[in-house]
Length: 160
Length: 249
Image (cartoon, each protein chain N blue to C red):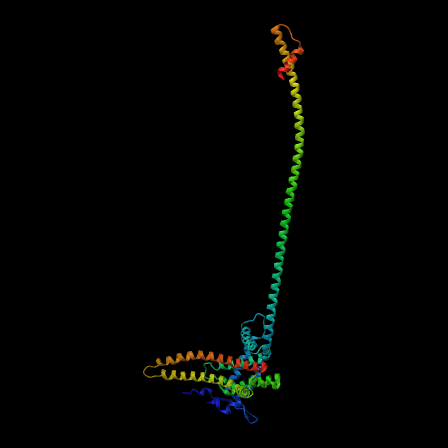
């Protein structure tokens, strides 16, 4: 086997040493660390981006909860205002109702008084007419006219 | 027809003699150079303008780099990162030599099928492991061989075995790779010979060559797998040995 011929060792080892030295010092050492730096930079970038994303998410969550809180507060405020408005409207309505009731009561009382007066007046007139009519009737039946005070009393008793 | 071992023959392209030593430029040197150029193109194109979002070349180089750093992180820990360029160089050099040697071309040669090359790489790894071990732990590095809480005589015996197994590491590392590469290429060559021998059966030409040809196609796929796996095993064992040197136990 040519592999075990000692004469082949020295030239192969010599060139191996030269080529491996070139490979290590002129090829691998100048190129590989560049790649290592890029890989490190990529890792930093990725972790940085992930942190930024996490921060942005936390901020968005905070904004969302702030918004929810704001909406809830506004809703509560609006509800309270509605309740207050309803209460004040009911109070105003009541006051107005009471006022108009009082006005109506006053007018009703006045109208009732007018009616009572009118009735009294009408009654007095009816009494007069009835007394006259009674006087006329008695005169025609008896030929004598009774005393007007007597007919008036009789009419009042009959009507009253 | 050429024998199955002839593919491993060293052919001298340019005889060079330096200080009494034969350092001729051979087909082995040529294919190490081809591997070097291929790796250089791969790495220089892949890292020409490194982007945060990598392109195809950069993604390919990053994939291999990530493979090596993951291996070091798993086997050595955070201190292993310093050896990433070295392990990367060893892995990609072995991988390139293994794969380029499989090119179905008459001049193709696999430097890693020669024990001189694999032993050179293994001794480099072993040497670095020793240097790191003694530099980091001083003479405490020898405690790597000494079992804790054990009866003295037994401990001494175990330490002897441990020392022997430690010293045999470069050889096992080298022979594993060399044997795998050599065996694979011999097998491909043998079945290739069968294709020609059976296919030229006079009464019924070509028909009997089909079977060994099919075997050879399957074997080629297997050899590609072995080329990658052996490069991986070489790098993995190197990282495990580095772990011994850095973390002792």
